[in-house]
Image 1: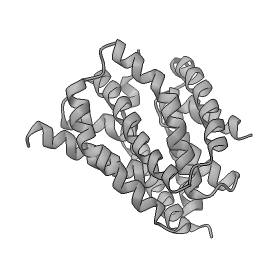
Image 2 (image 1 turned 30 degrees about the horizontal axis):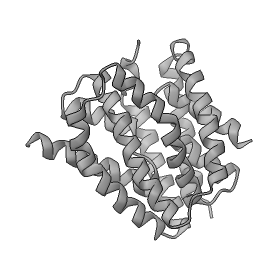
Image 3 (image 1 turned 90 degrees about the horizontal axis):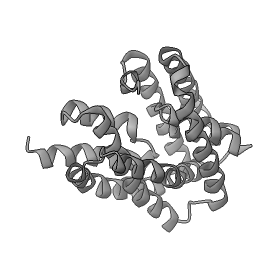
Image 4 (image 1 turned 180 degrees about the horizontal axis):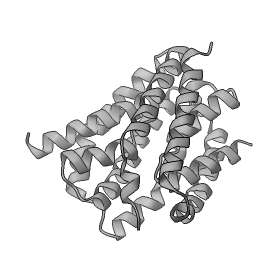
Length: 119
Length: 121
């Protein structure tokens, strides 16, 4: 597959899921870039962050245009997120990845079930 | 209160496990935020949290411009279409779909070794 088509296809899927559900960032894009496009991991990660940045801007703009964005909510989320990311980057060397992933998966599964089945 | 949850999600993001999928369920399930608002807030907040990271990556030379352009060729229209679909989707259906995807992501994280293992800087 021609490089441009491959990247664009991966981008398309990431963009669709980003717009539709707000998911489709690093954890999806980075492995795709590493395995399909053979990018080194650091560069895949760096490029993915920028890609999701611009992509999220488009998604967010559509939500805003339809009046779905609560600025105050977004502000609180942004504030917590900025501080949290900084802390998280500092904490990263200290926690066992394996444990974290299991907890993470457990939470996602529980939350997913609640959201799927709740009414 | 919401700030605390966002803090937690931010920490997880800083550890490269992805915070948005924690935040949206938390907002919807704990704070009863409507599904669309939760998704929109997380997307908008991501712009703030990732801008600094993007510049850092660029300075470190990890941002490949040509690759980025090609990805955006697909992802920008994709985002537009996806978001346009989302705002026209009833909240309950969107929430259930989100839940289904979360379960799939949970299985993936549980069963597959992810990129986090490689990030031992």
